[in-house]
Image 1 (cartoon, helix red, strand yellow):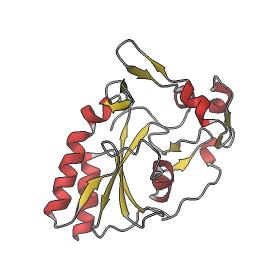
Image 2: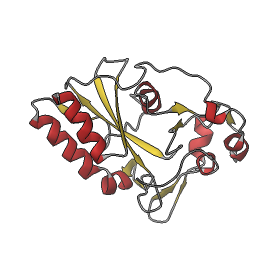
Image 3: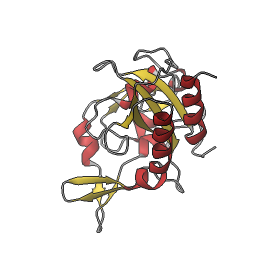
Image 4: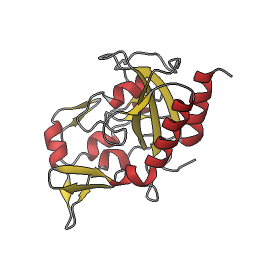
Length: 206
């Protein structure tokens, strides 16, 4: 097995899904890693501390896996580093949804989230940038197209409490973010109605 194939195999042993794409803005090779967010493994456990958002769920459930994979890649003689906070770009660059589609990890649904055939909209993605010789695992480019899973379904569009979701388009991202509420100790509660009603896949770790 070639070293690139060994890296992908290792990634898939640590994470629920893994794929490879190229960041179109930098041409960097990007390793996309996905874990299913469940009640027991809540990757949407965020806390606000001052002006900073702490990804507590990622720290609890993803960090050790990320560290193990980065160490493995470096042992093969290649560079590897997380992009963003714990592999999650808080400011949207690179675009995780676009990279996941390019890596073949699903297609965007009407709720704009990446819909995976097995895990539906419950995958949460993180990114490692590397110079390892990894072959692209999907189409290699992002394309916005209708998702066959969503063809006769409007559940997510109808569930949006602020009416800003159109099929495959979020018309007002600021209003969506405004639906986030903060608890007494800084816990951030994210509106997930468009996720919960999605009938595709299962919210269950393999």
